[in-house]
Image 1: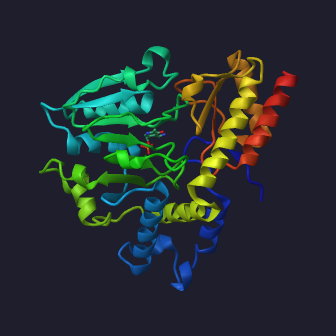
Image 2: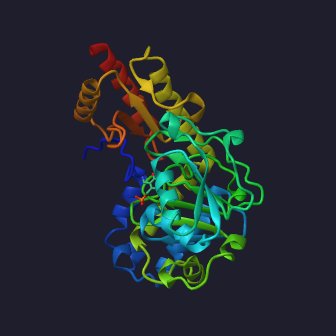
Image 3: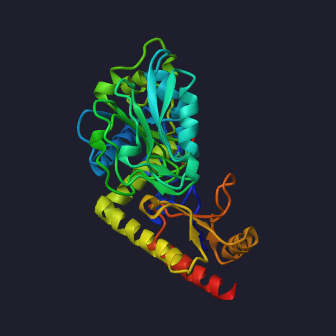
Length: 360
Ligand code: PMP
């Protein structure tokens, strides 16, 4: 077996331990004589998987009591629409902070339901920075403030959570959830597609504060209403059973390595290594994001010419480094260094970068 150094932006690397456990349990899950893939979502065994996934998410996010933890289908993109469908009406407004393409997509869906104010945007600088608190113009009468904590395509990440007063703070944490400690007690609603730090594609984690949930609109289709999922503990209809199981195993992995202290330590080391390599390359590799706004999860890089970038990506691929092409909308290089990417993979990549520079 040969495993590559996987820098895919999502779906992306999963911890080897998780894959091995899934493999061991594939044909006969804990002596029940079938795979989790074949199991009823209403069985005791699946109920236990769901309960453990929720308990470990609560523990490692340090989520206080008073929040519902839900698992939905439809990807994070469905949350772009479902959030305003449930919490924004004509005649009301919501504040969106536009720090990249995903934030733009979220805001454009919200416009279908009410007024959207751009409270701040870094679009004028090609999304190369995160606005400071005093650059954000919040409306105290907004229904909520929406923030994308990590910008997967542009490679920037919030190093703080904005103060929003009494206005509920909503976080799209798809590409940095559980990569570092964040004071989530300040938020009212979090969503994250699983396919970066949590597990495979197919399930989206949604966390809703009870007092915010109570404000949702009535009369929505059941399947698009958060209250349905809250009432039925994510089991209104058949949930993505297997992705929830892998998410549970990923949470167990976080637990087993020493929780968020260890996760953060590893991610800080990777960040230090790769940005160090960029900054010490004498301009050969150029970061695209202002130093104070750099992402620990998606490292975006430009080189002098597109030809050189293409050569880098091709040679890296031959050497076993996968997923280094920048998003098709922006070009360049991008190394996604999610939780399951080992420090060693980044060390090897940095060696490859130095070697490539010498030869080219
Ligand atoms: N938000 C962010 C920050 C993302 O990175 C992505 C996907 N890369 C999405 C939302 C959309 O997620 P999905 O593909 O699960 O709909």
